[in-house]
Amino acid sequence: MKFTLNLNAKVNSEADVIVISAFTKDESTLVNTHWSKEMKTSFAAVNSSVNFKGGKGETYSFTHEGLDVLAVGLGVKTKLTSEDLRKELAKTYKLISKYTSAAIAFDGFVFKGKKEESLNILGEAFGLTAYTFDKYLTKKSDAKLKEVFVDSTEAKSKGKKFQKILDEAVVVTDSINVARDFVNEPPNILRSTEYAKRVKKDVEKIKGVKCKILGKKELQKEKMNLFLSVNDGSAYAPQLVHLTYTPSKVTKNTKHIAFVGKGLVFDTGGYSLKPGGSMINMKFDMAGSSTVYAAFRAAAMMGLNVKITCILGMTDNAVNEHATMPDAIVRGRNGKTVEILNTDAEGRLVLADCLDYACDLKPDAIIDSATLTGACLMALGTEVCGLMSNNKKLSDKLIKSAGNADEYMWELPIIPEWEKDMKGTISDLKNLGGSRWGGTAKAAAFLKEFIKDDIAWAHLDIAGVGDSQSHLPYCPAKGASGAVVRSLVDFLKNS
Ligand code: BES
Ligand code: ZN
Ligand code: ZN
Image (cartoon, rainbow, N blue to C red):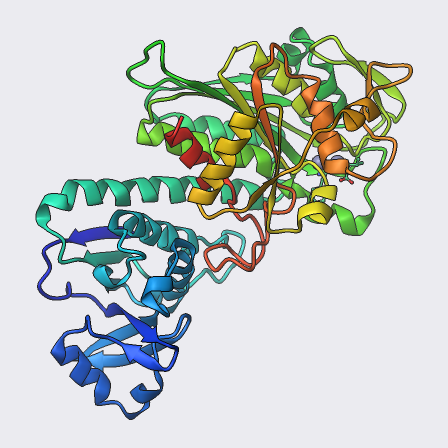
């Protein structure tokens, strides 16, 4: 889908459908003062148009000078929020995707007078809603929309700025859609090795990006035995993908952010086997890695002025005669021993070694993202991302970025009692707490043991938000959501 800006617009661009907004006063009176006289006449010529009041979620189709027009109700103008706009534009996309081209009267789709933010939201909403995963369907999606003309009375001098906003929205939504593709890919196709290969290929052409892949031998050399223990039962090699983005101008003030992502291409639970029902959809157990990858990719393509490392720990958690048995004691890369009481608590083992590896790079902050605990869904539901951290400044910044991106993020504490609960009796640590209560933050207490030199660190548990965000019209009702990427991009922009 291509966006074409038409500034200083006197008339609508020529397209198959014209999209205009409408507002309401007290839900009972239509507010369409921003329409042309001719448009108002065409609208009023249809009897049923009296029923359209411009309320949020209301739409009305009519014809004007032989062209289809879609009027989109946005409710009371002064009450319109950024997320309202994103949602209404997502619904609008679904209504116009049957056309090849559309012209949107953009000036009517601005919340609280914020034109630039609204333009970004238009790009986001259309780009995210256009996503389909139909490669395994014989009958493909019938969306046809190829070109969107953005008509605005704004001066032509704004052209460069507006184009940049749209271009960046396309980069971010494309990156989110790449991540969604990875997550939706079935586990018989996306093995650890295939995943690493696809990431390597995807970054090949991005300026300033380097990619290194560590396989089994290299991980052995690195003494990443916790990561390796998860891979013991697998027929496929573990892969640590190490990506680096270096901006074109680096000074001593340039910040270095390290991302770490859980990339379990399938989680059977291992010997602590998951029951059949809980195992379905465990292909999405690599969503944490795709999330940080998408943010990394977008930031690098935008050329943001921040150095970014991205460590993706990829393997499946499977069972064969070599698989790790519960009660195993394994020494991690940082020297601490872990009693593995439950092989289904595998994500924290992979992350532990990856976090220690990331610490050696001495970044200013580390952020990991993982579908780590089912308990996160109990604590925060499926709509809120769990955040845990050892650094208030960092967690506050992340919460602010989530707010800027209209995504829900809530911090859970890591209390000393839970840190104690993760200590072992015959080993330094155990991978399971003494009770199932507080499972999300206990997992974080375990991870915290692998952060050295007091590096600022934050852990994002995306077990709930990683997929099936059916309440968001710009996310597929089922499957990968791409949640949290926009928050992380905002964070990087402000780093
Ligand atoms: N990948 C799962 C977490 C998960 C469960 C994500 C459901 C999304 C939906 C993780 O590896 C896991 O199995 N965690 C266990 C931990 C427990 C054994 C301490 C869990 O949540 O049950
Ligand atoms: Zn598991
Ligand atoms: Zn898992």
